[in-house]
Amino acid sequence: AQRVTQPEKLLSVFKGAPVELKCNYSYSGSPELFWYVQYSRQRLQLLLRHISRESIKGFTADLNKGETSFHLKKPFAQEEDSAMYYCALTEDYKLSFGAGTTVTVRA
Amino acid sequence: EPEVTQTPSHQVTQMGQEVILRCVPISNHLYFYWYRQILGQKVEFLVSFYNNEISEKSEIFDDQFSVERPDGSNFTLKIRSTKLEDSAMYFCASTKTGKVAFFGQGTRLTVV
Image 1 (tube, rainbow over the protein chains, first blue to last red):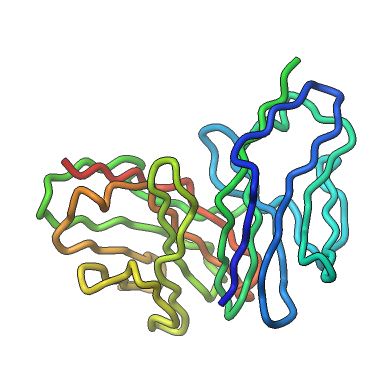
Image 2 (image 1 turned 30 degrees about the vertical axis):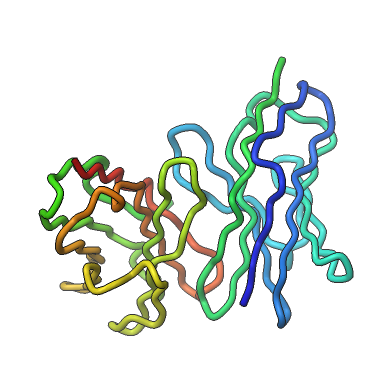
């Protein structure tokens, strides 16, 4: 069985400060991992997937198979980054989500 | 850019009543999903649908739930006899390859 853990329910940072959202997973095969974001009153949308290895909106995430982690990082948080962030893992054509982390970026 | 659309945005129903939540997936997508999110909890998988049949369902998706793709464009979730604990946000999603999912804006179901 697969499982995605996001240990922080809430994260508050100041504008310009670094932000890191933790995600750990347990999965027996080769996982495909994603970060989804939900801005206020908007739908869930894909932020990053590990296989693309790109930076979106200044965010990066590296898959660490040794630590079974896929932490999301941004060096300088902006107010518009305030949102709910979900780490997700796909297996057999379905996504399983972590509990989510609410990020608040304060001015 | 194509989007997954869901109707209605908010549905209030009495306990025991049937509800149908509607979704129009992105037109060339092949895999369809329903997820739900009870207030304050995580997004939970309900069911996946591929090739006109259910490919997987969770424990939540009991006999009270059913899905249908009646006309090649709509994808519906029916709850036969709603319970108070069915109150949640229901999200429809679709994907072309079974990997990157595109979500609808959700339907908030309130059972009273």
